[in-house]
Image (cartoon, rainbow, N blue to C red):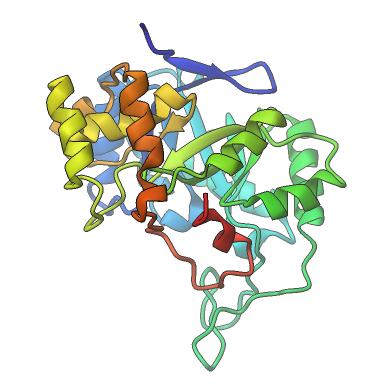
Length: 305
């Protein structure tokens, strides 16, 4: 069985099944990582304004010598820019050194209110985030639809959206999100969310597929056993898990050897997939990325999936 190298979005565009994530890639390192990845077969780069490294990502793209039209570039509208999505997009385009994005996502279904202390991660005097609880996400999506119609973004979508938020957005959308990028791995498989997105033609993307630094995924005995049986590393099993599910996967690394190995995916047997899909239900459910703006976003129901 051969695995797909691309998936088709609801726009008709093909998106590479494996992309290079750039979250937490440090300044001075991400430029080289992006350039190396593109020179070694990657054609999909996932970025975001809040990562604070889009300028270097853009430099890495330029360094690679790969033509822009051969690269699928994703970025994300940050929370403080939700009242003015066009401004947020322009900041990203300027940093990346491109005049369009292949995919633009609303990074979180929450608006943060910038203040004099911080324009991107503002906090209240008590240390909580400056969240505008009254903000209507349908207004952010309306702006995203306008950007899509304007041509500077070839597809639009969301990130970190639960079923409850998608159900609410469905009441007003005129363009169905092409993608929902969320934390996904065998300890957080989000079966119900995948079923909902599949039903509505929304492609899922997996970030933190290896569970992030310090997570127990890589050392899990059942995952290790599947890796041993297939003659590959645990990382290869975890990355392959998503492509076998029909999910885009975004492993992140700045190490050249890991960048190469992370692009390798293998077919997994029905039995292997059954084990991986069932780990969370055995009591191993774990979310790695917990936002400081709270659980009112519908994330609590993801643990039960």
